[in-house]
Image (cartoon, rainbow, N blue to C red; front, side, top):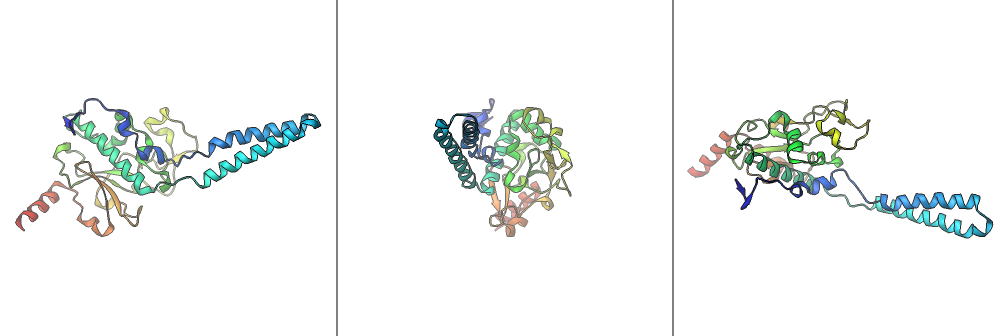
Amino acid sequence: MEILGQSTKTTTPPIYTHLGYLAASGRDVSGIPLIPGVILLVVGAFQLRFRKERHRKVSIATIIGGFLFLSMAFALYLDKPRIPTSIISGTNLKGLGTAFIVYASEHENQLPDAGQWCDILISWADLSPESFRTSYLDINEGECLYAMNENVSSMEFTKIPKDVVLLFETDLGIEEQRTGNVAIRPFAEEIEFYEDNKIFVNRWNQIGGPGDLKSDYHPRLGACVLFGDGHTQFVKIEDIDSLKWTVEESQTQVEATETQ
């Protein structure tokens, strides 16, 4: 099988190194000046305390330099760019769609097992856990913002109509409080995490239907959805009822269009 004229036999890591991976955790560069700032403060204080009087000016200058670096770090932290959650989620879904296409092409047109689809894509396609979330929406590492459409989960990939939902944003798996730890995820051994990194245990490998779609993560745009042909789209709240969730719904729409 080929995609856009290119063989899908070999997967290339850069395909999945997308914006969601880089931005989901809210990383910033404020730590760059923070470290030398702290070092200069410590060195300056030590010099001021223990060195001779003639070195006093050098010690004070060192301390001032430390404060300047700390001020720079604080300014960078306050001014760090915040990528809209809609861009992160849309890019995440596009990357997941590409992973589904390549996976199906190398597994006899089958989708990943619905009960393990997140784990399979991470282990097989070398996806990062960041590809399944955005921290700006209070979704911790080890949780997933998306669910697979239960109506197509057992279908062959190429038989899913292009206008039928494949993945969609959801709040499935959310409970009263986070009771699990990211250490329970199969990928935990390959990442750095904190022992107190709590997660919703069931917010992973999710499958669901129309009633599980979450439509208010991006109030002005609607819900982000990945369709059977791999394209993503923000569906406004007033248009959500028109989404196709089964092959039958898609065929009915085609037949209705042909009779007009």
